[in-house]
Length: 207
Image (cartoon, rainbow, N blue to C red; front, side, top):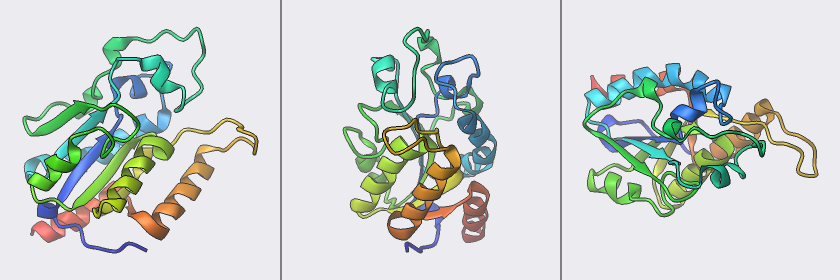
């Protein structure tokens, strides 16, 4: 059961796949939990930007957008994809210290990405993870980062799940996805806490 303090000068915030297409209701990629995650994440993001905590946005990007969606959600064959929405969610705004990049595959942390070097060069050993989708990108980040020796904090109200269609064992609701993955992370890979809890802890450490 991982347990460690959140010290701002040891932390980095990783936001995975939070693109405008995930939070725009007209998009076939729309995920209501992703839109719901923006509000809780904003105060923590503002703190990180203000206190030089590295803020990393890992994006899927527009290349092969339909093919990349197959494993993450049920996408209708006739769904029209607006590639202009394949960008960081507008609600986050821009900051000169944001590190924004398009990843090659599911993980926004390790596989085929520059994040490990980026955060280690800044002497960070603790990663706060948010984004979508909980059971794909977020889970892959958390497990890979833990296996590489990072301390990991999963932001429970900012990791957006999708339901899983029946794969032979019955359909799985968003609530069931959260229950299983939060329990697994807490058991072996990460602290699990809300963004507000993480912010309060970091503010106390900064004081």
